[in-house]
Image 1 (cartoon, protein in one colour):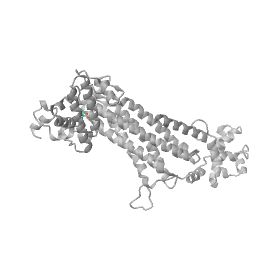
Image 2 (cartoon, helix red, strand yellow):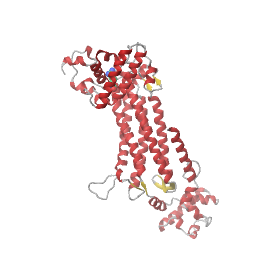
Image 3 (cartoon, rainbow, N blue to C red):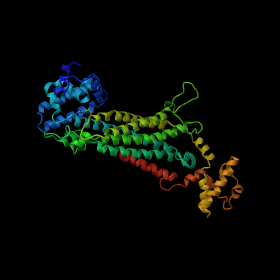
Image 4 (tube, rainbow, N blue to C red):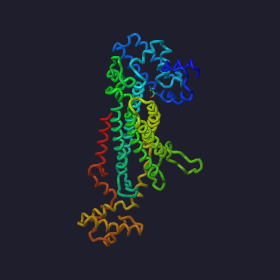
Length: 466
Ligand code: ARG
């Protein structure tokens, strides 16, 4: 860059030497923060409108600036806008273009404002919009899970602890467990959103401004319920984006757990699900393969979002007040996390809507795993035995049945009685897997009535949150 070009920089007044080209490249952010163009223009329009209302700018001049900004917006939308790296960031690119278009008046846009409060507002607007999308996607996924749960209230699944067969549950109960996690994710997102939607405009560089600005007015203009309380805090904290990515990390944690199960269930050894073909991929060498790549990648991409969270936490940990250029590094981690969370939620909803569940396979594995052993122990307790004694006796019966390759319900009454004479004919209905589920209707249980109550609560939640 020639030295005289330095004068073109909006902050170039005191400089005689041009910026080193590597420095220019290193410090520029326009290649990623151009995504904030819409928010930047929205914020600028609100700022100008407020300046006019406060008498800082003449009405006619303010209108000219607003018209100019609209033209810039059109150019950005049509793709005609030329982004220039030497102008550093989205803010200076837009301001420079505005001045090109409308002349001297364009330079008045920045009255009573700094890029420090400007970028904080732009980013808050961007994050707010992203979180609103997450909320919509979360609700869609919850709706799909609810539908699938309704279909499978009568489908039995071996419930696990330690990934070992434990007790029978309904597939509905299993799917609803994820729905409830996502309900909390939605609440977390909504809660984060409340603190994102605070306008920092009016904080200026760090100390506030001498102009009679009205931050509340700007906040209302951009649709935020509140304005900042402290100028130094307003320009320098990024806790709002950290909270957002934290909510996103938990969303991914939940999706990733679910993915892990789907990957396992798709393995023919389980065979609990058949992946929809449009959500699976083949192998270039093994013709028989149908791979759960979407679920695997979702599990893998979870790490990116955690990475973004750690980046952001680390970014702010040593920053003195107020604005520091380090903060420019807040955007890319969020953009990446946002894309990952958003796409993962949408893909999971699409995949779940089409997932083929195979109840016969679930039932076959259920019968192999002695999942009615707890029922038998409880039965003996019902006959007056202490639970510990009942536990030991049933353990022996399981070992006996396992050796013969039989399920508990396949043993004869005589065989059962050789372990305890408390066992009578009435044991057999107790060993029925369906009966084990039917009896668990206490709050939150896998029993059909308890599941029905969960479904009703979720329906109500969805209605109220719309
Ligand atoms: N590109 C900057 C950022 O994203 C904008 C604010 C720069 N402010 C400054 N005084 N250099 O943080």
